[in-house]
Length: 198
Image: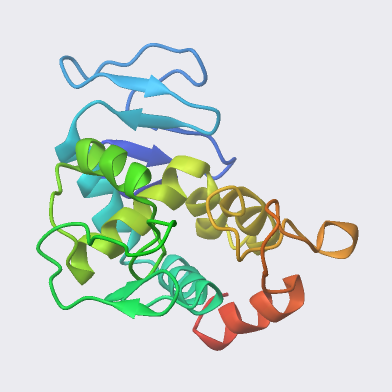
């Protein structure tokens, strides 16, 4: 098992949860820092714990490569606003002059940003904050857990629900969950490997 967050433990079999958890539906011995079970693992009710998880994930080469590949697939940059607009003010989530609020390296929607702000205790839109939010989104979806095991196919499938530019998988699943342009599966895998993913 690999402890990546000082309390949230990733087990080699793919299970995750607070240290002391007894598996899905089990009880935790963590005291006042409770956690809620999600479809893939646990998200702490403590923004400090969630932020630590995100920061520790950013120390993993596979997670970093995957995030950088998402940025390229989404056509984002830290200063990007959907449809080719840019901002220099990252002190807050940027206003979009278009119908889509997608912004930043990971093209995060304003509604997603609001939820992540609460979960992580972050209220700016700096490059560091965007990376932490992107990493936490991967953790919350279960994609980070797959990346920690080197399972790129599962990571892509799990992350494709958040990022329209990702395919759901190879073969017949080489399509987006959304009616938008996307990066084909093998192209995304090749990009991920070229950026240092294993």
